[in-house]
Length: 135
Image 1 (cartoon, rainbow, N blue to C red):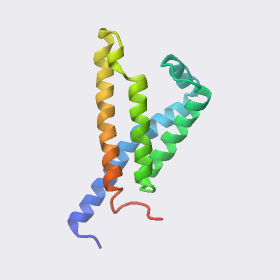
Image 2: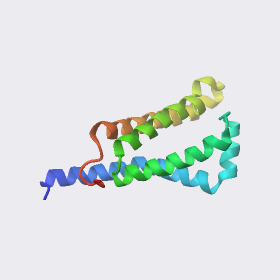
Image 3: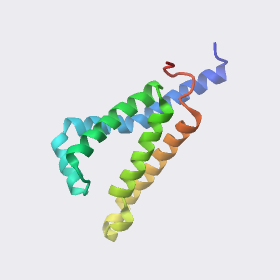
Image 4: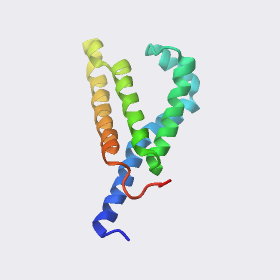
């Protein structure tokens, strides 16, 4: 049995994993459900090879977020999501390339992504915690 502090820390780590991964889980589900709309958004954002990048994004979002939530291969899944978020932020949310009138909204998305990247990198550093699937 875990000491009380370790038990609380384990539940906090689980809550953190669910909170961080839910962003990607919901995004992946939305992209899968509204695939045509997502494809149009990808094209509008100038993402190449939508026929490949969109399904790949859906698979990554769903599989890596599930791994983070259950605590299976957490470090690898969190690293994959962090790298994806860096690339997506630089490609799609680069507010500094937009007209000044559009920069504020996109800068908020960029800063939120920076916080998500930080949380994911923290999971890479410390792992999933004790309440994780151990295989």
